[in-house]
Image 1 (cartoon, helix red, strand yellow):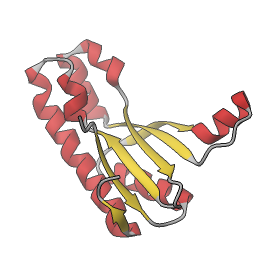
Image 2: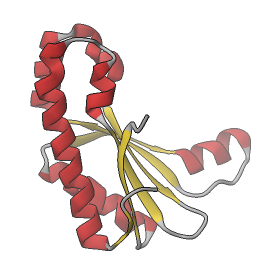
Image 3: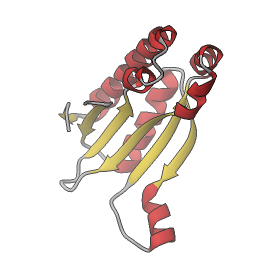
Length: 139
């Protein structure tokens, strides 16, 4: 099962993160949390890993609409977008597919919201690819 929308791009890791955050903003998303896995694992476990960030993205009007329909939806929010380095030096940007995520609720009234968020995430991924140069559409 494919549960993400993703691309691999060329560029410096921090530039890819910045471009991703800007593209999310252009689509109405804010980043509620930014988890630096590399730093966390170094601090907590004293292990070295490649750069990896989890961006918790939220579009407040869509979140409000979804929560009004399904209060338990909050357990699935915010929608995560990850940015990480590969062994060959490329950087992957991957967003959760909201249609897959919302599908587990079995609430058809959320379908329209999931399609909207999916389309927005597709545009975010396309923007990042266009601005930084795509290595591959599927990683």
